Image 1: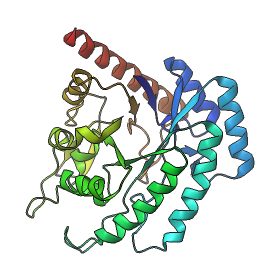
Image 2: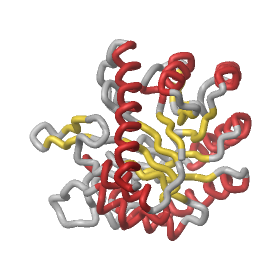
Image 3: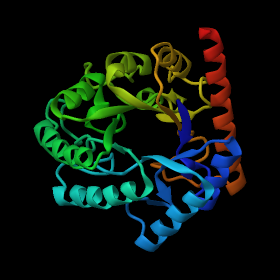
Length: 293
């Protein structure tokens, strides 16, 4: 088992991301954005510079937090756009020795019912891109987020059943603010624990995020792990008891929320929030291990 995280929440540049990772005593980063641009989209010279600095620091990119088929992409967009992203990601992952990639299943089509989401086209596209990754020795991991598979645990299972080679990265915090579209309107929010228990056999990796949904403001207030409604403690305890030996990747969202347009905190606050989040999760993990011993 190992600890990692979306270090772009600590700093925009690779130097700051490496510094935060070393401050925690960790050896891995889940690479997402470099200076605000996803790692599979940055220019080649910058990518080579990033790769050299990671190698010099002894930091491994355990997973690409890609933007492939994510919540900002529509299944009605030309498929070539997705294929181009995959084509850019694979050689860069091979260059870094990265064996996992986070993908999604395209945004939920607005104005359509849950059973009218072009799921066969989604399955077709994901089968192709998953084959591309697995042929390259890379494991594609679907995240339950603002996408087709994130509409409910039932939708995630339909993806797994219809897309060979697809595994899951389970995000503990996303269900807290996501409508459960397996239930009648008005859609209630999902239960992280319920979602997890139905998909756990397919989980190969875990994102640690937590928070509380405010129905009055219709916003998510992000918290340190174990302090929100993401069932973090209960899920991690169950994973440990079940013999889980994969990675836990922190995604704090405390001072920087990647898909919200709000001003970032001052650099040092951002850095220290990330490090504090990692340390608190380490303590939670230690407590749960003691409880199981």
